[in-house]
Image: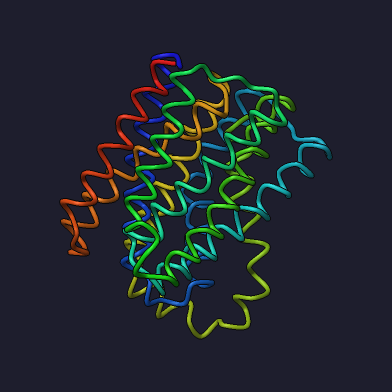
Length: 283
């Protein structure tokens, strides 16, 4: 992996873990309304940047681009909704590592089997270490079964959008900013009919959770934009597992800010993951 790609991935990991902590803090809110507010806020906050991008580059999406983006938005919609529901049922320290571990393992497997990518021995060892560390982080599959179940399902969706979006920005050359911003706007539109049926919850959710909404809107957009740029510099089978250093950050934040406990054991597991990250970075 190139140094620039590694920097992008590591910054994305910190921002990704941070917005997940904010989402967990808003877990008592209605999940659909919260996800919609985040998508809407992201569309508004990042609108000037996107408008400037269109003016400077003259980029205009065609029907193929819009179709590819629509599929991405649908997969991400399922991801965000199920993730928020999972945070309402289980601990961040269970849902997050299981989801983040399942996703890159499946994404890397598809990248090797379908996309004909070939990570070296160090890369393969790193991928295995990340998987082992994430499994340790989940408590060896014991304890919070609902959190584990949501984490596994969310992980499948992570694998889906990782593979799909990597091809959209590489094989189809859709600009990463176009994909992320249009995806945010698309999710807001897709959820609008459902949210209108819960309109009485919009203002109370905004008043109580406005800072998590705004924080997640900024950080989730930024974290994934950085990952998409990394996809243009390094293979999916390397980028997808390497970004899971966010598990280490999430454990530290969960242990300190959310007081979820088991910090020593989870830090040991995070060290295993970190070893995998180093191996992948050196591959």
